[in-house]
Image 1: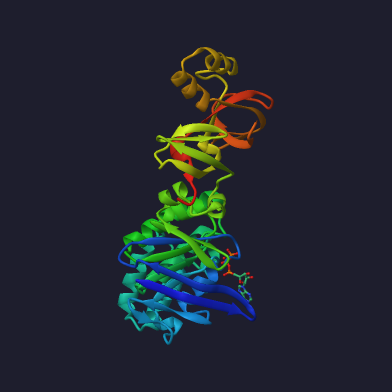
Image 2: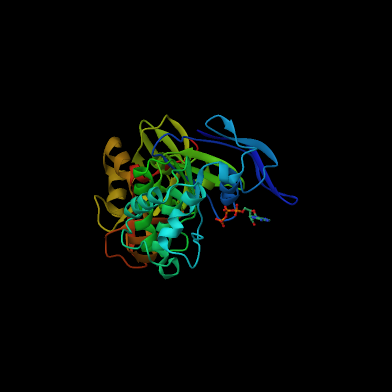
Length: 360
Ligand SMILES: Nc1ncnc2c1ncn2[C@@H]1O[C@H](COP(=O)(O)OP(=O)(O)OP(=O)(O)O)[C@@H](O)[C@H]1O
């Protein structure tokens, strides 16, 4: 267990971390992500765990031992930074074997371990290549192999994919998580990208302004963000107040079945939380007609679900068509598979399992 207790770090007169406490499970192949916007102090926290920043307050313990007097190289933590920081002019094998030479492993043992690491990071043929002739993705795999080679007690990855392009990032995020799980080394990965955090980690800790705001499994984080800031940071674009009644929530942009205790709730909507349709079970006229002529139960069911709006923008994204829709309750983002254009009238439906419940 990594236990961070009341930690403070200052640069000159400004406090970057203040009273930060966090426990990270370190048994086996656990990957934890530290997720937060640029400048919130993620790197500072990781650097202080690695022993690269002095604490102005609090303590950091690993498996019950206070690390205060333990210098970086005696902590047995592996660290990989954004740009890999490989030793230029040296071969891949020399880089991966570096920590083993420092620890006075025998030449045979080093050769075997380097070969094993090259297999693990899927670069078996590159041992003799100069690290100056690697692609960005290959360089980060070599940096990972170098950090894993001495069998660290904990691996700290500080934005390891930030310098790579989007496609490579998503691929390598999954691969790195597989590699560190196969090596059974507990890992903390710093990122400002929530997709990357979810691709890699079992648990995500969200950080804001030098403090942690929420720690949870990815699915729980998306469905139950702790507060409005966290919800918006995680992709919510509209926040609405709603009433929960008898297993349904009634909001200004539609109603949906959601099993919540009766009362006021605050909901976070992402574009995919709202589905827009051009044709549906009812039209505006039909709603009006039903409201006037049909029995109360039928009228309520139709009326609650049917919120109409006007399309104000359309974007065809790789994940599908996204709309901004003006409704009586304000603009809301939505997704659709219908061929709509700006100015069309659509009706909106909430997608219950895509709706976030804030602060519950
Ligand atoms: N050596 C330093 N001296 C002074 N201020 C610093 C130093 N390092 C970081 N800071 C400041 O501390 C704050 C936190 O920086 P940190 O790098 O920890 O954030 P971060 O969350 O990792 O950001 P990013 O995602 O952009 O790397 C920032 O305001 C930064 O400008």
